[in-house]
Length: 510
Image 1 (cartoon, one colour):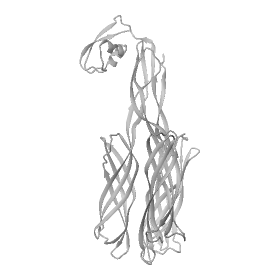
Image 2: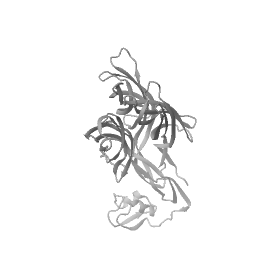
Image 3: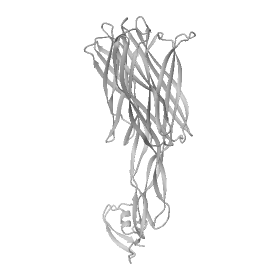
Image 4: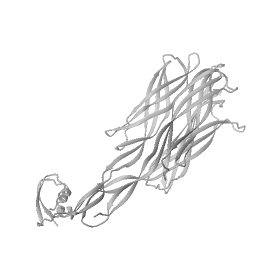
């Protein structure tokens, strides 16, 4: 005999694809006529930019360009110059199938880059970057409840899990005209970077209201003859309404705003009072929305009439999802024994590599960041220095948790102080966002089968005396004698399931 069970579902995010691909970048650079000859290469940077990521026909395709930026000291005036060149790339990843609901996450990291000068105007560049691709899909797992009223006795318990109610993603572009009016005019761009931070997020019925800030940081040449450099730090807000089926005002949001690619151009405008720059940024917003859901799991079951056999299934979920952000200050001292600094041109962090570790309920964020320093020595010659700064922080968060996943980690600002002619004291402001959650692991009963050829042996007595020890469970006693737990507790006026002391019990039999 088989009993009827109802299967209910809970949704969760699953890594449908999680892989890394290495992209090789080989390029020969010949400086155009308007660029002066190279005397010394200061820094060669590889910046991958993603333009599109498309899932079609069982395949994920990621297209973009690798921007190679060369900072060098020119042979005429011994000033800093810059030249960039782009190389397209395309990567394909096979999928076993195409999930119905998913988001695509990708990240790039420069692994190495080598730059060799063949002549003052020709360079050979060889490098590589890793392209990590992840497809997160919405999947479902089941739990079971018993449908019928019969001789089957069921022991159940309620647990709370996070149900993935919404998953969505949207790519969009932002264009901004920037007038440089309160600073010296821009003669030539040397380097620039763009970052995006979510400032506010509200969910309503099937819509997400996104507010964010875009930050442009740029270094440029203000005077070609003297080589004088200036910095531009420009921040502007954006807002956007994004369709996201399933979200409500009660949804716990796990958002991610990625800068896929960006370009900054000088724009000629005779009507403008200052230099006009045109910024194009391509962004990707991803959202996973969770709602708490109560599951009633069957821990045990038995029949009062027949011997039974069980079938169980492992259930692994997470609960209490939340996003927590924190700020950490890194301090480091950089000593340059071989360089006597006359001027600091720029100090910035190029990359952050960090990962969270949870041990005994304590979260640690460990990794490192690369600090890049453009300086001038005592002879007024540009010098480039790079140092690695260790990240080791233990943020104090407002809740306990089992798991922590790093959503975003970046350097918000870098400040410095010259303590002497060869020593820089750095203060690095690090910002990070974590996804916290708790583990839920259970092994519930999903099926009960009765062996009709093995009926429960009948006892002529209506009551059985049982001498119970302290700590015994009334469910286990009732199951031992194939009676109902409710009758056992009623007959002995018991309120708790676990006996608080040793005692004699009257076990009713049916």
